[in-house]
Length: 289
Ligand code: G4P
Image (cartoon, rainbow, N blue to C red):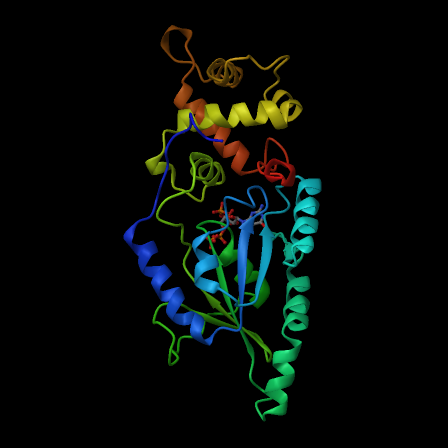
């Protein structure tokens, strides 16, 4: 996959620093909640986390499930279950699935809570670190689960300054972390998929090329949605021609009757990102079988 795609990588210095901070903070963490994007559940999971977390218990939240193909999300949840990984679909825009998370954490940490109680530390809460790529919905998740509570200002021993704690209830505290990517994506597909969803900034991307590749994927996976959104009788075989036609349909025409393809590309990406084309999952279990 990904031979003809843009070679996208984005790992500014602040991300490297944040990753080092996470490694330090992990020492006092009981469990990690990894927020992934339900539309790209593979590309939005940081492979460097595996090395960092080692045997730390982990729960995956497939966020933005309201924008993903429901069947594909259910397939992923089943897939994780078979591999012994707990994953929950969530929609932090409405809060759907967020309460299931609380219950799941406490069930997963039952033994630890029992140990705390037996050793006279009955009040000690479970400490959970929340991690994820930029824009995946970490702030929305924390806002939802904490009911908009403000972060605690105090610092704690062993915890790097800058990361914020949220008390959810007597048994649960969350540590927020900044969105991080990793130094080099495994292949061009990863960078591209993270650009489709907005985890990688458009500042470093050729958005016309990106839109053309999105058209290619949508033509393969969701042709009816593409046709319906842009009133296309047929999708032109050449993706660039398709972009021109889509732009034309939206009146994005410049002098000489040509399509303003940059405007059309940005519009298409925006409409994908805001789910206007439809509920779409770009990475399905069967693609990785
Ligand atoms: P981050 O902290 O990981 O960077 O992500 P953040 O919560 O800021 O969310 C990034 C964008 O994704 C926000 O949209 C947010 O509303 C949206 N979002 C988060 N979770 C969900 C979800 O489950 N479903 C949907 N549909 N959207 C979600 P924004 O356009 O940047 O801001 P706004 O629309 O909230 O004003």
